[in-house]
Length: 618
Image (cartoon, rainbow, N blue to C red):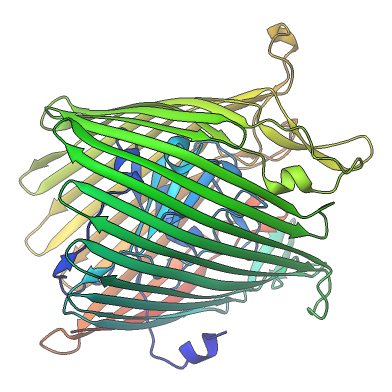
């Protein structure tokens, strides 16, 4: 779409730490649901980046596992053992999970151009609705009103014939803010892989993504502010090695956001729209599109929050209209999803307490949460929450063609979960250490699973229940020298999950319990970085445990480990630092590990990437 224009620009890249812009003057602040929803929970930041990356790649250091169908296939998230449709993605307050699939392909999302990205772990349906069972991914564009403008150009290439380019321009003053970010990724994904004793070339998994993000904001007066955000993207894929297939995805996301902000009262109104198209063809060239689906979602939301002597309260209403159309639906799908929600939080001395609640009129579903954060000492902080979350059947669950051409009688998935954690922060001289530990447990009733039937077709059914427990560990340690710093950042997740296929009233010896497929038992992520002046270097270690690949647990994929190395150098092109350049190199999969995230889909072996970024700040 615009990749050919961008590729004529200058070179660029960053490996995870953003170049610092000139400090802004003012920012229009308003309370959001995230302020209430993150109390008592583990919150994980996603590093912003100066280059074009999919959100799958950007989240590589968060310890998140993706079910990735090869380097060009879809990548769906697994949080705390939950399915992909049980993790919600919120973009500028707008839920953007595909209405028909109920999930998000994280390879379709460009991380470039987002100002704020983080994960709230655990069930959060009381604040974000259906699907926030395992976690919620938050993406925001935040306007900054200042007298500073900036521009950046960046590109890079690697040894697998992969290329990326991105550009961004920001203009702002005391009243207006405008940010445009364009990115293009073209991956040929040419690499050698091992099949038995034979070395083969994997070269038919091409991936091409183009996106453009736009944020326009205006501060009407000292009390009111309006923001309009759009995100448009297209993705082309070639999938498979022996049998070539193609997939074309196109999406539009847009939200208009109005804030009225008084001293103790805030009103927020959102109007949003999403459009998603997926087209799939077995032919090498898209002359006709034999298999396609189209989805629309219309969204409106009103929030009112106020402060008083006993705390902060929030009430709101949101409404979705979902539409889906596919050659595999026995009729077009339409459903209306109104809901009301409320939240309250207060401080009892140094202890934070929050209550959340939500009611869905479609299906008459209630969800809620109780959250606490309290310090034991100056260094130790405790977290606790208990919540009820849910996921409704997707449009595909309900309307996909079946022998009787009737809507299946599926029940909502209902989950109860709890979480408890401790955070420690100690600063002593040149050292700073931050360990954390979080334990969780969740039960899910009526999990929806697609199962093969006697007639050979697959159909969604409700299983009985499933249980999930786990432990998340974290450790950050920084040591400062005279002109340098050494940083360790370690994350570890352990998941113990079971699905019960039979009636739990039957004696336990006859229960049919299995592990969910494609969920690793352990993940470990360690990043070690050393920074001195304008030079930054790092090494990253990833471990992913074994995963079952069949529902009867008769087969599995082995665990694997990868190591990445990188470094970049920041060059100030002028004494005033108005212009700057960042040059970088990284080696992905240094040890040339042969591994698969999903069966039959080898992942890339060792590759080298060279990048550079040029920025202008005024």
